[in-house]
Length: 332
Ligand code: FDP
Image (cartoon, rainbow, N blue to C red; front, side, top):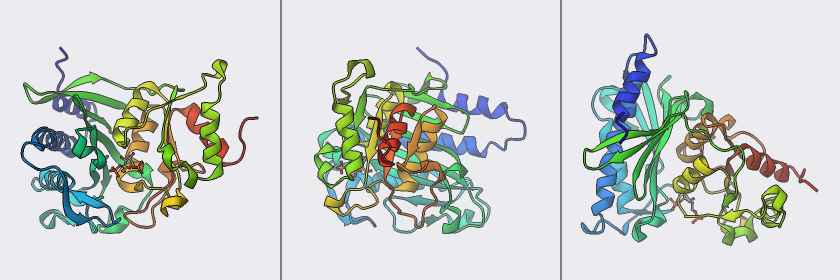
């Protein structure tokens, strides 16, 4: 049984950095606490009649589920004391939440997608919380509308058969598993490396009629028979980005959500600040890559808080190929 808890691991890493204030450590540990609370709510949601829609829509016009809102509340509350965070922005809130007592002194701004893959809520499927941490600069939205390279930490909590906490503070990616009987995340894998090449792809191919021809051609290429090159690839798509990304982190491969003209999503579906930047940092730190097809996701600066972006993430080999297709440089 592993015995290094998330808190101990974070604190030991902090001690390796003389001069660290300990605030980032505290902040990451609070994401851990929020993750445990959300996991607990998910475990009993069906019994407590907390499944189903809340009767509201978010800024992107999507129906909010009761658990989207509950997870959002839990995360906001986790940072409501201690003076660490000045601002929290969430996929579920139109405007950022300002912690008024800390607006001037909190050194960090946090961003999150509280319940990713919410179509899985009502069927007991895998879900996730994605988070990103930035330094507060001048305060206000301008601090958030910046490149993904300015994130100081990012990660996700995966609610599956086990609850996992995966994070990076730009020194590798580390994976923890919740041991429910003691209520602690225990270190399961230090310095996770994503395989340079995989065997699977994750995409909602049912929507391919609305994709750019280049992405359709990439998908057809993945399905061609070519045993020497490891083709055909297998499809694995769960409807939860965190779940699909986690598989790819461990086994390699590619997830993509391209522009979709059939549903009017000309910039794709996924939100840059709450989903793409944080997972791109995790991928980058694990030796993988995330791209719009034309540029690295980490380099993209959003025009607005809820901006969407075409997204491909995964192993170096598959993401590089995706980019070649998008640039019309497909292998012959
Ligand atoms: P959801 O809207 O259910 O929260 O973030 C959006 C996301 O899920 C991803 O987790 C998932 O990969 C994707 O959207 C699913 O969208 P489609 O139903 O269009 O495939």
